[in-house]
Length: 195
Image 1: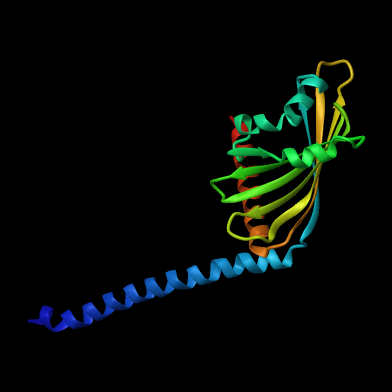
Image 2 (image 1 turned 90 degrees about the vertical axis):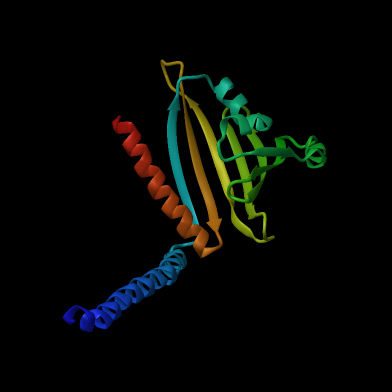
């Protein structure tokens, strides 16, 4: 009989623990996006980042890879499709620098990037001006440029590629997501390098 008399009390305690868990989950669902948004707002929208890497190849070969935009989907995992803007490129053919305008499509992230390559110094310096947009909206997520500089390594059949990104991320949540992605990507690279 004692067991039956405590039964409503046990059900009440069990119900309270379920309610506590549900409330905790709901609070996390609200707090995490708010924290990411706050972090994004606190970060500066403009940034400059430089990375350098050495390749065992020639400047001519690396330049061909970087400027063959139609081949990007074959070696860039974040590019599903390329559309070269022939009309824009026809207008640019009379300029001193070679320009190629194209659109990169990333289906997984539902975004498109409008890119103009300006070959400032063939086989040495390429300026990549870009504007990244969501497929759902017309406003830019990211605008900026990448300056790619190729330098031969003395005494070796190798070159260094220096990439300088100057950009502006306009949406705080995007900034927070990119920062989070960069952190986990860097962590993954360190883990792979240890192997």
